[in-house]
Every structure is written in structure tokens, then in C-alpha cells.
Length: 134
Image 1 (spheres, rainbow, N blue to C red):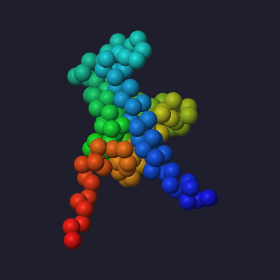
Image 2 (cartoon, helix red, strand yellow):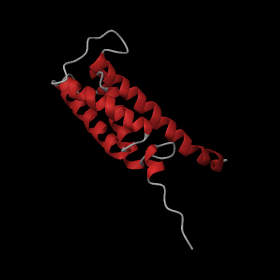
Image 3 (tube, rainbow, N blue to C red):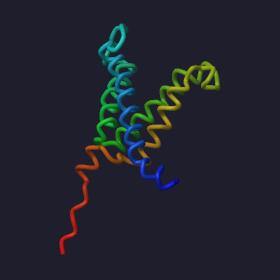
């Protein structure tokens, strides 16, 4: 029974990486472009503008699996900074200060950084090992 689940884990991880990357990129597109939704775009030369660039570009890189570890590490750090700057001063507990999403993104990206790109990624295509020539 465990073998059945183990065989699925690379695919489930790839889906996690792709879905989380796309969702994170949508936060960035909302900040930078105002879409999806009806919020006005942020100024690029602001802290929120820089966060939007990291979210959009980093999320897309993670979703397609290109420079995955670097992008995940940067996105994890961005979410840690976001939490401690915007949420933690309001209250110590994320459930009260509404910082749960920042904490979850931070640790999911930290996991992606540690795990690497996995299957269905551009990184795995680029770094495919050469066949052994005999």
C-alpha cells in the first residue's frame, strides 16, 4: 500500500509546486497590474512594488520549475519579511494578525527550496544527467 502512495509523491509534489507558484504569481500580478480584481496597481519603486515583482516573477519561475531553488528561497524570505513587517506588529499569533497565508507561503517555499524542482520542471530538463557511455 505504501508503494502505491510513494509512486504518486513526485507528481503530487509537482502539482504543489505548480499551483503554489501560479497562486503566488497572481498576488504579484494583482499588485503590479491590478488584475485579477479591481485594485489599482502599486508603484514599482515602492516596497509593495518590489514585493509584487518578486511575487510575479518568483511565482512564475517556481511554477515552471526554472531556477526553482533560487526563486523559492527569495520568495520564502519575502514572505518572512512581509509577515514580520505587516502582520507581527499587530499581534503575536498569525490567526489573529491575519498573517497565516504569509507564514504558509514562507514555509512551503522553504520546503520547495530544500526539495528542489522535481519532475515537470525546466530545471529537470536542463540538468538531465548524461547517459553513461561504455
